[in-house]
Amino acid sequence: MTPETIYRVSQDAMIVAAKLTAPVLLPSLAVGLIIAMFQAATQINESTLTFVPKLIIIGLVLLIMGPWMLQLFLDYFQSLIRDIPQLIG
Image 1 (cartoon, rainbow, N blue to C red):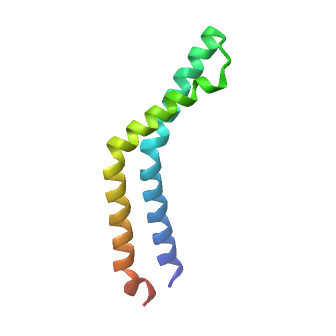
Image 2 (cartoon, rainbow, N blue to C red):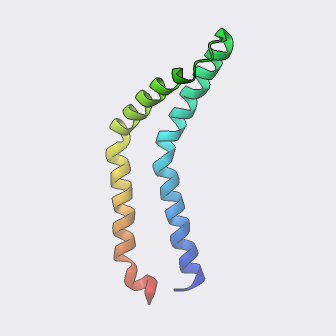
Image 3 (cartoon, one colour):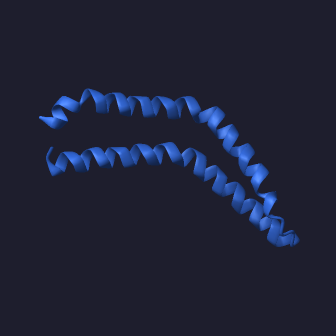
């Protein structure tokens, strides 16, 4: 394996990882920010207040985006397995 091949495979893996985590992290971040602003405005300092809405949002996102995320992961993994002879040789 050449250093360029290792770089390309690791770069593709990082891109796939970013695509898989972004649909979960971004809505969770937005909900956390909205709840933090609500807590700052009302001076309610309850740490469990952010947990339930984030959990609900993450569950909904996984329910909606889960099939796409799984297909993206499977496509990447299958292409990686298929390219093993070219990567090694």
